[in-house]
Length: 312
Ligand SMILES: [Fe+2]
Image 1 (cartoon, rainbow, N blue to C red):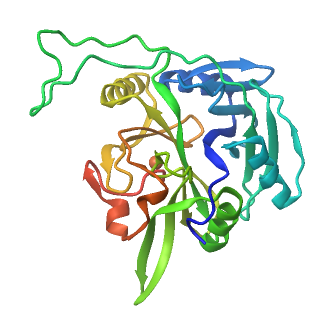
Image 2: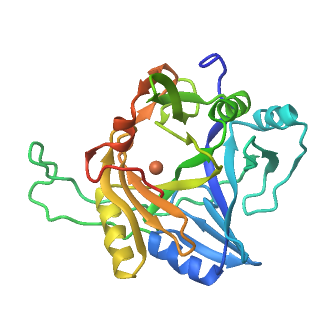
C-alpha cells in the first residue's frame, strides 16, 4: 500500500542513451549547459551537484534510451532491490565506482540502481545577486551581478516514460523503490474514470523531494518521453534558452510554468530528436504531502506559457 513502505531510492541519477554521433551530441550537451567529456567511447556529462555523471551516451546507428539510473538510499537498499528480481550486485566501472544492479521493468526499459557512488567535487553553480521583484526588493544600492558558473545545470530531476500498462508499471516501481504518487491523472473515457498516468516521487520520510522523479503515461507503445535537468534559477534557464537558440538547436516547448509540479520549464530536442528539459522552481513534497487526483486540463495547462503536452 502507498505510504507504508519507506523508499529505497534517494533520487533519479542519470539517463543513458545511444546517439548517432558522439561529437555532435557533446556539442549539444555543452550548449545545453552540461560539463562533459568523451572517454573510451563514452560521453559522460555532469552538472554542478556531486554526481560524477547525470547523462551518458555511447555511439550507435540506432539512437535510443538505453537505461535510467537511480541512486539507492544505501547498499542494503540496493541489495534488497536486487534480491527482489534475483539479479546480481556488481562493481560499477563508471567514474565514482560503487555497486550497481541492473533490472528490466515490465516495458522492457533497463533500470539501473547504484550505491556507494563516490561524490565528485561540487562545481560552482549559477547564482546571482538579490532579485528586485515588484513587491520585495532584495538588492539595494547594488548593481546586478552573476556568478561565472562551471555549468548551468545542477542535476537530473525527473524522467517521463510512456508505458503500455500503467498499473503494472506503477506496481513494479513501487515494490522496488517505494514511490509515492503526487498527482494521478484521471480522465473520463465515455463516462468511465480511467487513469492516464501519475507523477511519482521518492519516499524519503520527512525529507522534501521533487514533486516528481518519474512520470508514467499510459500509451499504446512504450517509449522515452523526456528527461528534465534542474538549473539554478530563472536567469540560468533564460541564459541557456538564448544560447541554445543562437547555436541553432531545435526548440520543442516553452518557456512556461506547469500547473502540476510548478516547474518553470523549457524543452529542447537533442540532435537525435530526444527531448531534454531545463526546469527551475519546482514544488517539493515529503511523505506527508499526500497525493491528488487531477484532470487532463491540469496536466496540459500552465500557470503561464503554452498549453499542451511536451516531449512530442
Ligand atoms: Fe518534465
